[in-house]
Image 1 (tube, rainbow, N blue to C red):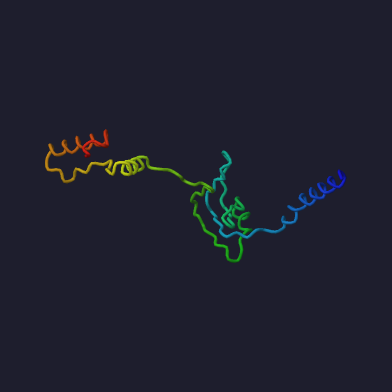
Image 2: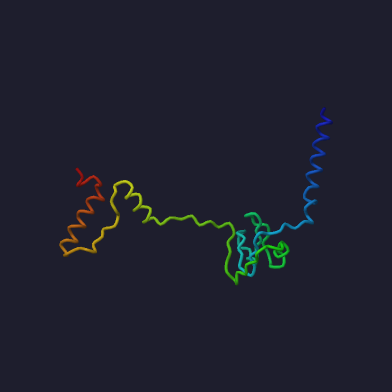
Length: 145
């Protein structure tokens, strides 16, 4: 029983080690190739490369144009970046804090963070509006019945 299990593990190990060699000669065709760019790989302070190949939404090759172009199929679009920068996998997720704060205030008190003074009739009117708005921001229930 132990010998049979060891035999199976050895067979699985041999097959697993041979699997990569079966696909080494086959070049995956890209859905998109970007060339003549500045491609940062995100691996520390390495020198950027000039091209990138993508297949099914995944990066399959980065390097010089010749290396990447070997993934070109008969219908693969090739985009000349003309020296523009590519940062693969960089997803910009940010917020504008003032806008988020205003949205949150609008959700909680139905008011607005901004005070529109465009139709103010006098300096006294501006001061009065500012006072009323400041009180409602400091105490959102002020002035409500």
